[in-house]
Image (cartoon, rainbow, N blue to C red; front, side, top):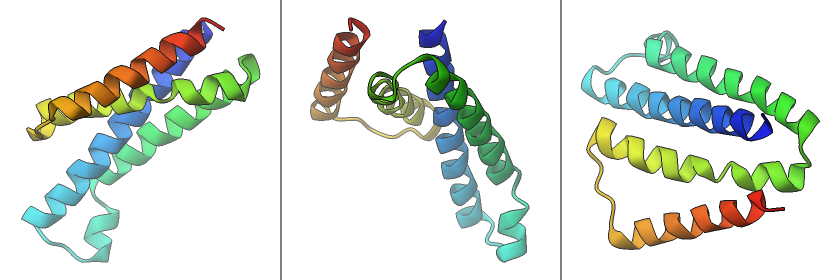
Amino acid sequence: MSLLLVLAVSLFTCLGQLMQKQAVESWKVQPTGTLGMLTSRWLWLAIISLGTAMLIWLVVLQRLEVSVAYPMLSLNFVFVTLAAQFWFGEKTTPRHWVGILFIMLGIALLRGT
């Protein structure tokens, strides 16, 4: 159950990061003042997503030691990289994927503890 909660935190965090990026991209296309930025639906969706992640994270911290739980959030690197490729068409180099592989190996090692 704890692993599923960590996964949920990572997914909500990933969504929040992507929505933040979408918010600033929309500001480039259609510049607005401060009020327009603060009323952006993408910004509010990011806040809701990141807030949800924080609430789930609090449950995770009740169940796992922070020294185990926190490194597992490195899953965010994997999720954000994959999602950014599909959502924003960002390119990822082989070197980047090797780095992600090391992150995933580290997560596997932590999960074994």
